[in-house]
Length: 171
Image (cartoon, rainbow, N blue to C red; front, side):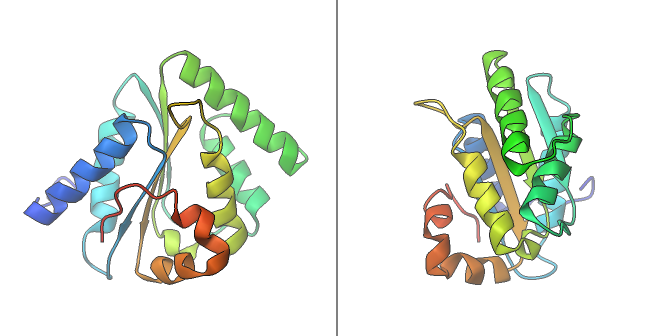
């Protein structure tokens, strides 16, 4: 990312992602073909937000989790949270963490690269995490960077709820 040439398209993408994160809007996607710079953009933004005191970030470079529970445990591990024995308890663990950070005015951001590799239950877990919110703001911001296969997955009628939560997608 240190050598990323910021074209007008890349600048617009970065602006959209920053808008979603800083306004606590929840979910945004960066989608494009192989070699378009998605990973470089994501790493640049991750570095920018990880350096800020009012942010807590997680970066998942290649999601290769066997289940939604393993996916959630991986995210929790990045935040230093205790592993739990059930999906419900792990969801409660991260919900409490997100509420605590929101109360401290700290924004939590999860960056996921190669998001086209997420399976249906893991995409549903992304949707579930977006339900952790106040009346005005999402408690977690999620940025997905993916090849165009993610768009095909999101077209599935069973993903309508997740698709409707995407703010300012960049394609």
